[in-house]
Image 1 (tube, rainbow, N blue to C red):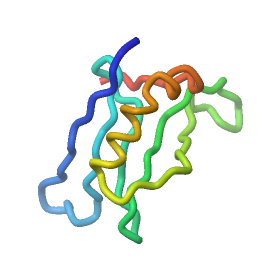
Image 2: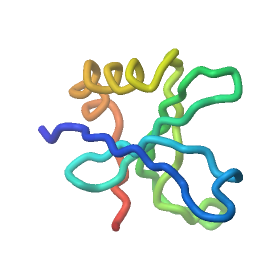
Image 3: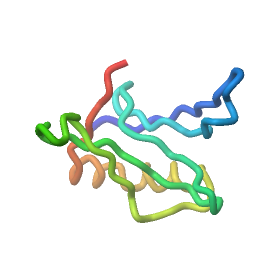
Length: 98
């Protein structure tokens, strides 16, 4: 079973204030989700899960958000690492191509 890895993304350039910094969640060197800070200061974990494309929804994935919110980014990372096997068993994660 592959391990989750994390990469902090800090936006730069002229329009950086319009995009929030986030942490990318990777599985086998491919992106599967992200951790992002909410307006209330908590952190939310979002994962891309495979789905069958339809005419109304042509994307091969959909975003899900875990119910558990964390008080810090570090706490969110630990939550993912603790539930690593369970997350991979329950969800069929979509891996984005680079």
